[in-house]
Every structure is written in C-alpha cells, then in structure tokens.
Image 1 (tube, rainbow over the protein chains, first blue to last red):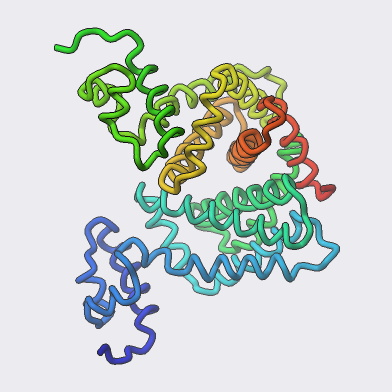
Image 2: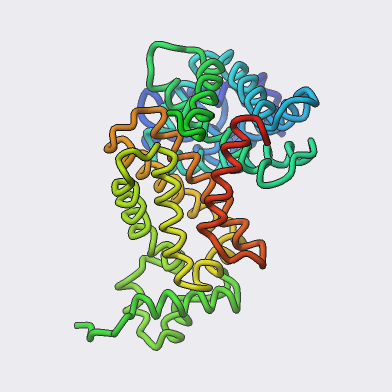
Length: 189
Length: 189
C-alpha cells in the first residue's frame, strides 16, 4: 500500500505552515493541509500524529544536531562556549530555511497550546545539551546551568529575531545575547 | 448551599499530596482525596478544576510574591540581584512549609504530564519577573535574560534540593547556583 510520494513530509510541512499563516492554526484542518500538499489525508497521518506535530517534526533532528555540535566543540572550549557554538551553528542551519523558521515561530507565539508544546521541546533540548556536556567531562551543576542558560539565550534570541523586522542574523543575535547574559549575571548590565 | 469547611483548601492539598506519595499520582482519585480530607467531592471541585491543579494551586500566590519581591528590591540592586533576592525569599517561604514542597517536587518529577505543567508554570514566572524588572526601568534583553537565568537557577536548585538528602537549605542553594551561573557564563567554570 501507499505509493511513494516525493518529499511528502516536506510538502506537508510547508502546506501546513502556509495554511496556519493564512487562516490561523485553529482554523486549518488536516484535510486542507493534505489537499494543499496534493496528498491524501492518509499520507498525512503516516508522517504526523496530528496537526500540531507538523510544527515539531524537526525537533528530533535539531536535538541530534545540537548534541553532536556540543560533542564536536574543541577540547579546550569552556562549557558555555561549546553551547554557544552549537546554538549558533543550529541557528545558521535554521536561517537557511529562509522564512520557514520565522513564520513557524510567529504561529507558535500566537497560540497558547503551541507555545506550551514549544516550552516542552526547549526543556528537552536543555536536558540533551546538559547530557552532551557531561559526556565532555563537565560536572553538575555547571553542565545543567550552561545548558539552561543557553536555551534561555536561544529562546530570547528567537523572540527578538521574529519581532524585530530589521536584523535577520539569528546566529549574530545569539552571540550578542550570550554577551549580554554574561554582563547581566556579572551585574554589569 | 455549601456549609463552611474550615481550611478546606489546605486540607485537600495535604490529602492529595499524601495520596500521591503513597499510591502514585496516576492511581489516586478525586473521590479518595476528598474522603481523606473528610470533605465532599463537591467541595473538591469548588476549589480545584481537577486532580492535577491541586499541585499548582499555589502558583498564583507564588507569582505575586515574586513580582512584589522584585519590586521591593533596593533601588541600587542590579537586575540579577533583584531576581536572586526575590527567589531566595520565595524559597525561604516554601521551606517553611516543611516537607510539602519537597514531596510535591518528587511527585512532579515522577510524572511527565506534571513535569510539563510545571515547565509552563516556570515560564509564566519568568515572564512575570521580566515584567517586574521592566517596571523597575530595566530594558530588554537584560530584563528577559535576568528573569530566564533566574528561573533556570531556581529550577536547578530545586532539583538539587530534592535529590540531595543532605542540605535542606533551598535559599542557600539558590545563592550558590547564582554564583556558579556567573562563573559558567564568564567561562571560568
């Protein structure tokens, strides 16, 4: 059963986001998403559990990417520098997808349920990053603190990226926010 | 309707936590909680929407407490010091409730749904603290960064407090973790 549909997953993701932006997340249905992607509803459910999960389909890949980027950081890198480098690299990847990440974030910010799902995703990312730091020999609480601080920076940088129409440079915003966090925790900002 | 039941709310909270600890959160029912508290099931639903919300009944009070503690901090306090002072004061209050806060945290840590609800509560606390900082004249991103960093410290200190049987001093753990965060962000830990 099920003939092969080229890039069905990507087509469904793009169709879903288009519809969420045009008509609002609550209003768009799986039937419409599948129709927009030129695919059967059945195909949708082969790839995603429900309408919400289309927006979180990349979470696993993103987590694996961050974990391996932390692992790859130079041996001499401090924990916070390893986290910074990993998040900037992930941000550069996201930015290459163009408007997708930005529009996705706007849809999530406008809906409480999606916002909560995103918080859970970010907490899982923080836990995975802390684990990657421990495997580099970083002890706790430094591993957890560096990971949680990194995710806080990521979250705030993303919000700035989406809300400020000007600067499209997400990795740059992350680097800047890490600097500001350092000043804030040192009590100089 | 509804005769007055002295401290019905507190009795239900304590009965619920007792049952969650004894039998596990999933197994305990509202009927049992009400029976344990010596109250009618109807009384339970006058105070709480469902079994889960008993564990989050204090969230609003806690948030108001933190917001006013941030507002009360000395004018010269840096944003991070205002957040630190507020969290330590809230932690001291929690600690006075004795085993309640510790047991509650253990129940939450053991259940995914509760853990997610707690993340949402913490995100709301961070947003409220950032708002309180802005009202002190702190600009963004410093306000958001100080608030998010504070909540990260709070979360990690709580986890340490619950998992380490030795040190019962939650405010002390928070102070210590703020110091460690400063070292981590400065790259000296």
